[in-house]
Length: 312
Length: 95
Ligand SMILES: [Fe+2]
Ligand SMILES: [Fe+2]
Image (cartoon, rainbow over all chains, first blue to last red):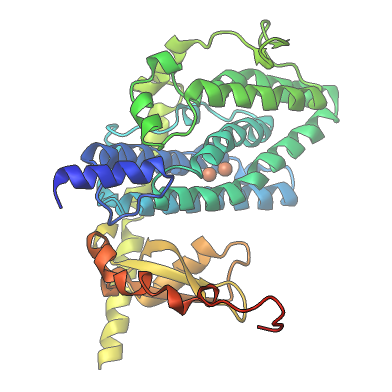
């Protein structure tokens, strides 16, 4: 088969909504785009455990503690499904992790903001997982089979993440004035970073057009961000919280909420490594890998011993 | 020694009695025992399974997609293997 034939078959599959599978021919740029996007997504799941993991021992009661622990455990699983998906594309998993640790690979900028109070944990579940779900539901229909399947599984697990966060904030909002103020403060700090999670405006987004053409992405950054705002504003009203944006208002003509321009300087600063927690997050990941070395070595030694016993 | 030296395992799960094991994904582990434990922790956190198989990925042999047209051709051309190929008068019941 000639290269032109292979390319034609690939394009036909994309046009007919037939998933691309690991052994199928694919353009090198499609493969590289996927490796970059999926590993970045995997890193976000793993780094995303840090702000929440920090609160497990300080959860206000046993129920909240068990829930938070289960959620953080899910995020570890999500990281694994996604690293596995990058491996089906021929990526070396350890190398993708090394790229994270060296700062070459990115992860979602939201995790470079600190979780300062218990209310932040509620806000993270509601807004950060909420924004992630908006993005991930769309990715369930992505053109690469293993990525789409990982997304389906992840979305099933994510739905409790958002609900537990919302429930926890609801509790604070119905509590003392101080508790409600804590919830409002968390919303004030997480609202804009949550909107930044969808990435740059469509006009600025470098990879967007080709990714849409290849059906890796099914919606643009701005479309997803708008859906998130439209879904979240009524949820804030039910909590009795105020979204920190003076220009937020329903636009009858568009059938959507209008909102202010994002502070893109802040976004790019955080992406470039100058957010409040970038250094701390990477240091924690590097330390986890180094400190875990003896565990991996022990597992190897144990596996070796067991196989020797078996063959003896 | 890093994880990359751990072999890759494919994970198959039987979700309930009476159903086949179904491929759910993969993971890395130093041996089968740990692969099964990891598979339990990663793929059955919500009672998704009652039985797990793990198979080292290198042990799986697959058809070549580029050749799949000719490989599966013998079955594509035998439409008389399907019940709808046969004409039966309207009055005939239980068939
Ligand atoms: Fe997740
Ligand atoms: Fe989540």
